[in-house]
Length: 97
Ligand code: SF4
Ligand code: SF4
Image (cartoon, rainbow, N blue to C red; front, side):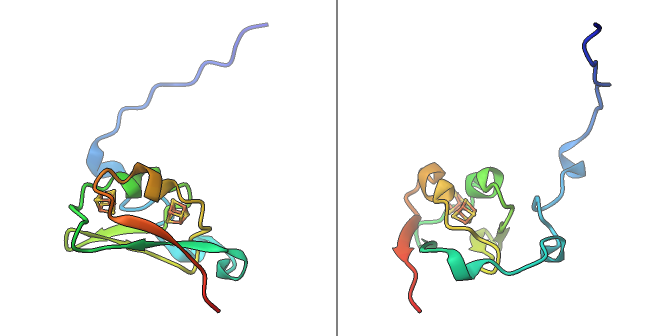
């Protein structure tokens, strides 16, 4: 059987959307109810490198005016952003009701 061969597509950096879930409306419900820990950004340490934005699996991080901003309505609290941040600008804190 022949393997499926994908067509190579060329694209520029400008073709990549600002965030993977650019319109939060693509997700149907706010999930903050089941998150037990949340990432908290220290703006003083954030250097705007966009690594957290690139690695966040839910696309809920954007970089605004050189600082990372998290959409807590759709962040699931996985902590990947905190692991990837070399500047140590993201800490995970317990959710408070
Ligand atoms: S990875 Fe860290 S330093 Fe880079 S934009 Fe995100 S929070 Fe800021
Ligand atoms: S904790 Fe996970 S879902 Fe939330 S902003 Fe960080 S990487 Fe994205």
